[in-house]
Image (cartoon, rainbow, N blue to C red; front, side, top):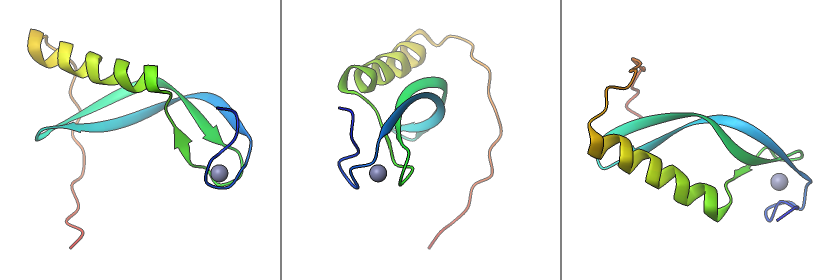
Length: 78
Ligand SMILES: [Zn+2]
């Protein structure tokens, strides 16, 4: 994939910080390689990266490893 499928813009490889819900648990991941559209800003993750994100979260939760935690603001939208 080298073009944004939403707008056709050019994609650039960049590491980003993301947060994913796993059940009710919210997990933050830093430095995940993503493809960012230069035009609309949409970001995409390649299939192998998406799989790795899932594996990583699963691994961390199953091993009950001690991982750093952050407090985040929670906003009720509706
Ligand atoms: Zn785009």
